[in-house]
Length: 135
Image (tube, rainbow, N blue to C red; front, top):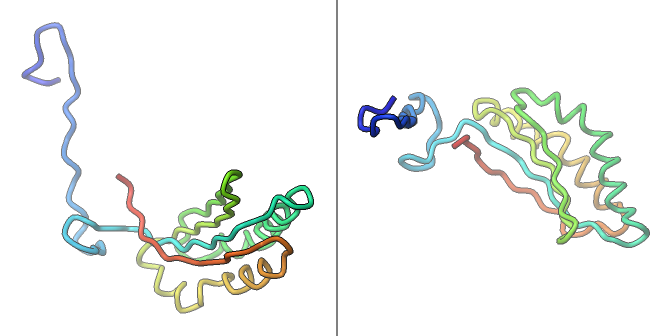
């Protein structure tokens, strides 16, 4: 209970966020992270009743067991935007496991990118590495 609260009122006192562990990577002061993610993204087409989107989902379903078997994987998310026609797969791994995954060329990234490029209606295939941290 907040000692400065008016009698009869209660309020919640929010404690400051604890300091990050000493071994946590930091981009700059105050910008630390514990997770590194790899994003695979592309555009799909509305042609043929969104066949390219359906095929991208089938490809993800095929590769999901291998993606989820990545050492240190925290989560795998699929994001789709129906307005801008984005299809994204974001695989997050613990920062300490990222280097090993990078050495494997983010397997099965190469397979996903090659197969996605063969799907009619798929374009603008890109990848990106990003850091993540809960707020």
